Amino acid sequence: TANTPLVFKAIRSSHPRSTAEREAILANPGFGKYFTDHMVSIDWTVEKGWYDPQVKAYGPLSLDPAASVLHYAQEIFEGLKAYRHADGSIWSFRAEQNAARMQRSAHRLALPELPTELFLESIKQLVTMDALWVPSAPETCLYLRPFSIANENFLGVRAAQKAAYYVIASPVGPYFAKGVAPVSIWLVEDYSRAAHGGTGAAKCGGNYAASLLPQQEAYANGCSQVLFLDAQEGKYLEELGGMNIFLVKKDGTLVTPELTGSILEGVTRASIIQLAKDRGHKVEERKISIDEWRQGMASGEFTEAFACGTAAVVAPIAALKGRGFIAGDESAPAGKLTMALRQELTDIQYGRLPDRHGWLKRL
Ligand code: COI
Image 1 (cartoon, rainbow, N blue to C red):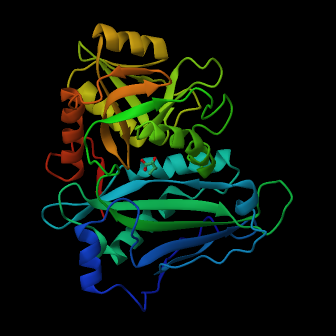
Image 2 (cartoon, protein in one colour):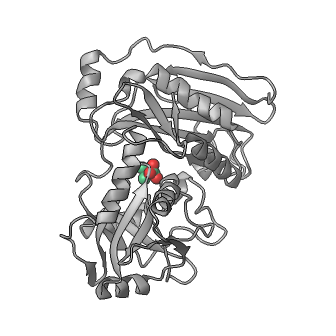
Image 3 (cartoon, rainbow, N blue to C red):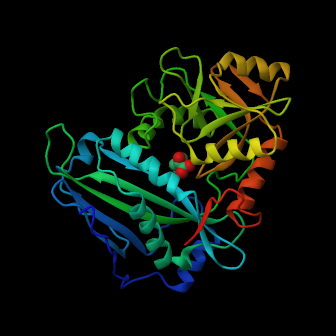
């Protein structure tokens, strides 16, 4: 219950991968393809609250076919990373922000809220158990994926009275196959991502499921992300399929869509805003119409654009494409400010620059 401190039971896997297998994976991890030897699970019921926290062997979940998550998508997730510094130590980045966002997502999806201390402890437990899986090559790290599902076996449509929280971990390199090379994005016209009052600000699987059909259109047109406009007017930039978006003006001002309740409150987004302000750049969080951006690209008012998220960090955007048009230049090099902010952020994350905002925690 709420006032009993929960102690994790750690059960070491009886079948961890061999050193040779692990090293082969760490040498070329890709993104989200391989998982470590262990996982975290914590169960929840209305009566007991959170109970039985464990770190145990990674493996399949057993779900009843009537489990509510399989029918009504009562599910939320998070993404954060653990970084190995040059001295071998391992650090998390702003993990309490992920804990807080997961609580907000849980609230929106009528799932139980995991207390911040338990979230942070679950990360520490898993990373400590699987420390050998935190890679050390440049631009690699351990991506952590906490998630929570409703698993009451009941088909009535109401908040489940039984749920579970898990954390899995995946050694990763760059999110995009091309690394940090500039990407093109595809303007979605027939679909929107999230409506006013919907689940747009929650990190729930359904938001990402809804992005997959337009994402196929993007791939077919040589673009690696979709750009969604607001659902009401189909006019203002919202976000990409799985990342926030920033534009840079020729005077160095950063412009990014304001948080309206339908946009994911990115931790990388917030960190970029802070770093840009620290450098003396103006940052505008406001509505940006697609026409403003397209005209501004043509006139030279907007000189750079980038996507950002935990997985991709900062990804330069070279061009915006849509039915019958290309704005920007698909072969343009990455923007200067874009790459400088990316460099500074990763330098902080990997311990190459002082952590002046206290964003890192040793695990
Ligand atoms: C992230 O971790 O950056 C996400 O939003 C999830 C997905 C795009 C990998």
